[in-house]
Image 1 (spheres, rainbow over the protein chains, first blue to last red):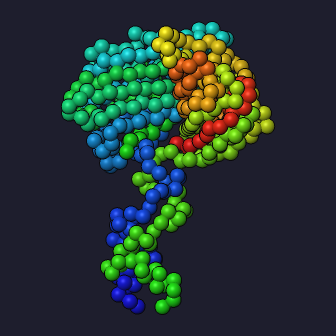
Image 2: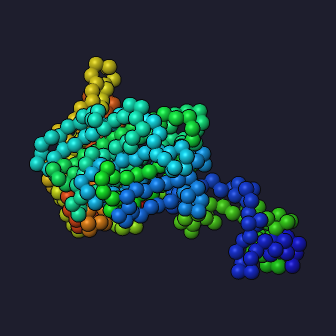
Image 3: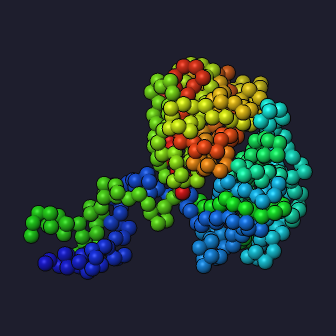
Length: 224
Length: 215
């Protein structure tokens, strides 16, 4: 066996897989494309399954360090799938600068909705000033009341940019679609604004205005 | 030492590290996931070529919570066409699920004389099996086309209605920029397993529709 082959053999596990030293950046310098199925974009960080929870918190360093919410990524996306409440209630969020000891960051926001009833009435887009905040510390609504019928739920997403900045306020916007079963009606809601703090935001909480988060999931992504 | 072995040996440095000649794009063909990989998994690409309809009948199942359709430069054969879609609960045998939806737009023409933000009552549906508008009034000049996204959530659920959200942009027939934002739900607790796209009149001459699963 030649020297190269011996050296290479030393970079293999006994099962034939490569040790970390077998491949470096130069080894991959000839790669101009990776399979579409393996490309990076939004990096999945963690997913939270909901089950009769009074709230769901995403705290930097939580879940044994898996729950990242710091300067690792330039933006974070929270995706909501079939959020189902135990009561006819609003879905909302707040943020924390002290790892979730309290959730009361000052916010200035705006909120508008596009809606349409199943009977064909109330097709409209309008600003809902009752759902916005002006230097408020309360929870920001992501939806109005939506019913708790078995087939009612909310889907959508919330983006928060550069939460770890100690220079800028923290911008966010949401885009949620839900079935308001009590009417019945479709609603698409947009909430956007900024967390008016130059402290790093390191935790976020989601909850209903009354009752529990009965089912659904919230997945957290970082933008590479 | 055989030829292959000699070639392999030449793909290592003297210290045994793989050189750039030892790995190429083909070496990665079987990679479907990277531990730090992204969330968008390409499932299919449909390329329009004078098609009356574009039907996507595979890949829409319970694998992902969210499916993302990306429209890139869809160009209609006929001026003032409406790009639209419907869902199927029977694998594409028929397309006509009850939809309730909402729609609004913002626009501004090239001349600077017309602009607005308004609800689009002609683009919404109320418990209708008609096709849902995504882009209303695309121009058919050579340079005109429409692009955007459609998100479909948890289509395989047999518990919830199926929510969708679209955000599209195109150059209008009357030489204007227009962004349409539509959303709603398929009012069914049956699984949605196929989606069909088409222009209201004439074909879709060119453009692509990519389908991604969101991990």
